[in-house]
Image 1 (tube, rainbow, N blue to C red):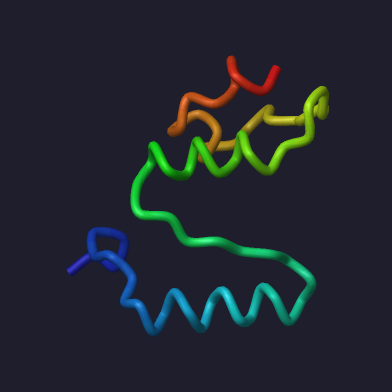
Image 2: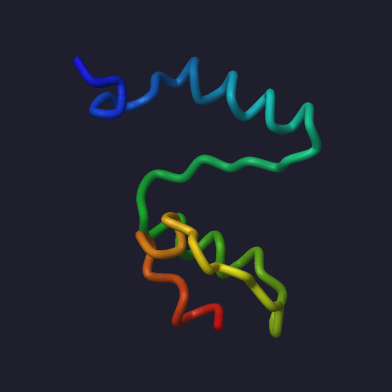
Length: 68
């Protein structure tokens, strides 16, 4: 079985979030791509410049046109 074909467990997600926060990185969990896009747009200050040259997440959420 390929590990990338299975969703992470809640325990694994919590462990990852805690590790990121320990290193000064804020992490959030949302239910779906629509919520993710909404949350990103809420968090970005108006007029913020975002470098997104190779972000799979930004491409997947189709955010580039909304933030640039």
